[in-house]
Image 1 (cartoon, rainbow, N blue to C red):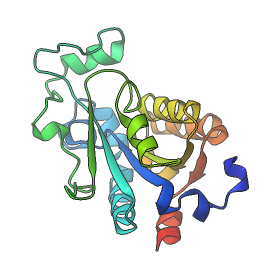
Image 2 (image 1 turned 180 degrees about the vertical axis):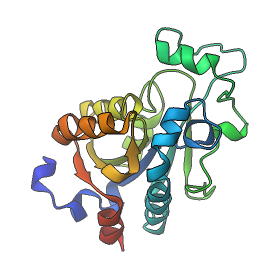
Image 3 (image 1 turned 60 degrees about the horizontal axis):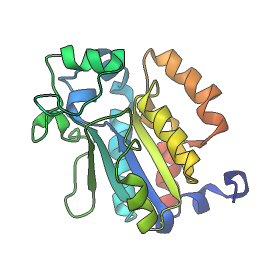
Image 4 (image 1 turned 120 degrees about the vertical axis):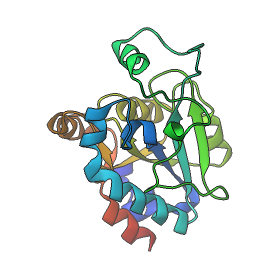
Length: 208
């Protein structure tokens, strides 16, 4: 069923909804980031990400942390775009089992409720990971996408989820891109025709 025929409360019913946090990790939007400009642009959404994650947990909605990682030797990671080159040159590395790949403290991690979804290649947590199979096994039909960046990973994620038949909801005050105005343009001219746009307050009210 098209999302335009669904009320928001039905669209994000906890029985068939998951929350996907895209790269909300210390090494991306934390104080020590591989991408300082993105971290700066994300400051205004940090508190909302925390509120959203906690509201989802309170409603027994699975919180999935889509984490970007790279092996110390770089084996298997992409080397075919300038973005990957910038990440390699940064002194901040997204290495497994380090603080950089841990969820930011404002979002936190509940070992009994949350799911860690690492990836070592590609542009988003939907690219070649187990996400689609996990969602289908749990009969999830709606995915709430939040995090960064609107420039690449969030867009890529929304495209993949739509192509795979999911309903996608994007809280516009829990996503960010660089420059900030460009991020707003993406929301208004791309995501608006694909996903259901809402905000964190509306979601928390629906789940309360």
